[in-house]
Amino acid sequence: MEFANLGEALVITAGVIITQIAVAWRTQNVIVFRICELEKKQDKHNGIIERMAVAENSLKSLHRRIDKVENIQEFDSKG
View: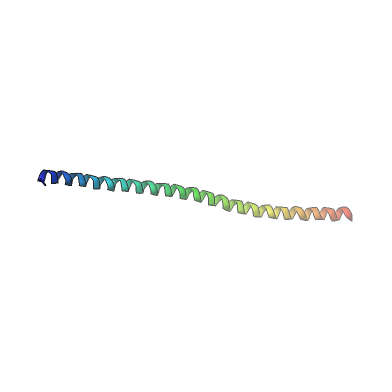
């Protein structure tokens, strides 16, 4: 093998290695970005779930109060 061909092969190999490293770095950055965006969406979703749980508990309490008022009204109307 001639030295000129060997030099070309080394330059091409170095270029391929550098390109692969750049592509891997870019892909990693995109993946990290997308994971961060997904975490934001998940945090938002979790916040909604927590607020809905509080609203459901409040609604249960309200239903109990309404039932008590209805029972008092029924007692008063009978007596």
